[in-house]
Image 1 (cartoon, rainbow, N blue to C red):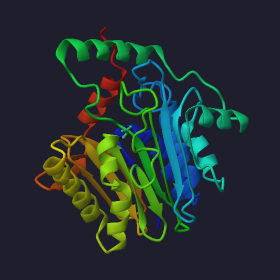
Image 2: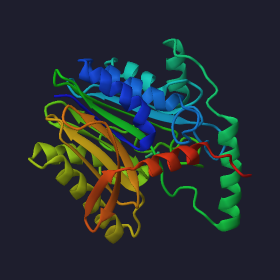
Image 3: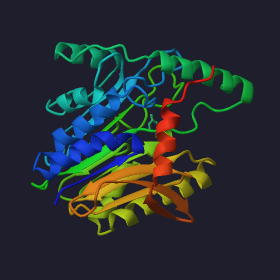
Image 4: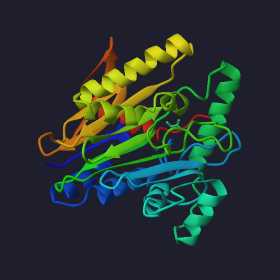
Length: 317
Ligand code: GLY
């Protein structure tokens, strides 16, 4: 059995290539890291990698992680500036015995020492978004922190190995130095090839309160299906946050077990995800919450076309 599942439609092109590789017998780690790197490289995705939106200081600070479910080795970077593919740095860090999670200047220095390419990650389009959002935030009283789209991809290869990787520019207008859930093992991602893996997207400060990804994997290990684990973790966390904290941000997850069965859950109106397995042809699903359950269905052509037009639409400043 092989399988791959990813947060958001933006992962489709990378997942398409990775699914072909996995079906041909490639390893999960290389396949998913390449798939995340493809999202990082695409300039129109404003929440990941090149073209990602900047912090309130106008800098693009990127977070990324990788975890190998066979060895439980992980690597992660936070607040990495102007390095082309943070996910590849994270994967390289996972091969180190120590210093697996590096942030800021230390992460950048290490990446440069290892020969990772420098690249200016701030684009003109991201600056246009930034100026527009600053104005809306002031004029209309909108919160810049409402939600966030992190790419997280889980792979299962024919050898039974699993891995997971994440990448994000983090919450738009975040403070310099702020880190969300995406590079934090157990919150933004977790993977154990003997059980399965999970990854999250949404408001990191809230996802971290539930150690969301670890909790999903723990529940799968306890016998829940991926869908039961995903729904129960997301909705219990939301209920807990509402009753004890008074608010809950966007919380969305995808997961897969070692048999290639998958699950997805969300507390928002529309959460898209991409999945392909030996049994499930490559599909973009649109998930929505109904009561305490997540329902999903394949998106149609109209949805795909509207998406393509939206991400490339000129930004009216
Ligand atoms: N989930 C991404 C972040 O909060 O930065």
